Length: 313
Image (cartoon, rainbow, N blue to C red; front, side):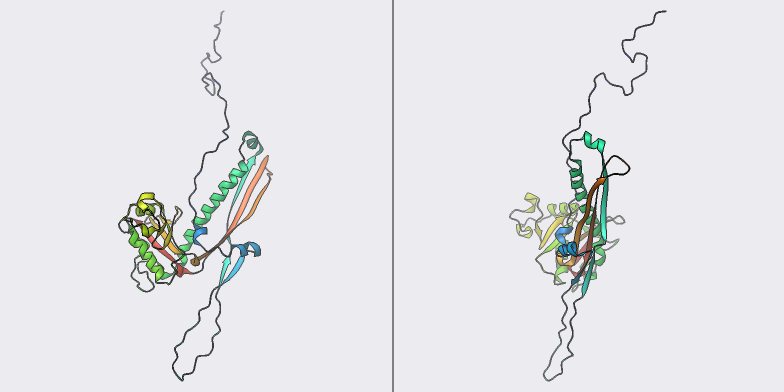
């Protein structure tokens, strides 16, 4: 009995696994890396970090002394004066009690196959991810300690009639009223006697877009020689240095964003990359790369912070 001669090892009807096209294409490990973009972080720019050096050198707690308030009494001729007071300095305790960590492993096989400096690349990414985590937590924390006169629909320590929005009733922002609301934040801080120099404002991307579409064509408002509509740069608005962040807290109930304004005097922040270590893994053939970042945050003066609770109008 004669059998046909097969011209291909796959003529039997059984497809190869995987089904190659007949040309072998080797895998290539690229020596390039796809760029990664991170959310902007702002806490280090808007908070007071003066005590960070002391914390790194001394431990996990620092006691911050505040300037005492001296009592002023009225005086008339021939009256007796009040007994002498002993001014005391209130203490603010800043605890380094928050932290985030990362724990990764680089297998020996993967290290051999790649010509990239993986540890260095991971360190850069971990640093950025740490900043994002910290900013997200601190921005969410801030709202709880803002002075009652600097938030809500009856804001204003003197006027008491400024609407900065509240839960279930956020301010509806549009390109027509966005500047008026920024001016309102400035008024709230003015009524608390907060210095004009050093003020900041943190807004989400959608509010930045409203500003760019607004009638803000007067270059003097931005402190820039070109109008915002020409160069898209936020710059200075109504005595505020403006920062854009996508990490501001958003309430899912009414889709409102907490927008903060203030002065660096209002919050103290200190952070330390406490541990970064590389060691051999016990359960696999590879190197462990891990790190711990600790930080502390404290609203030291709620009168120096203001909250605009707003949604897109």
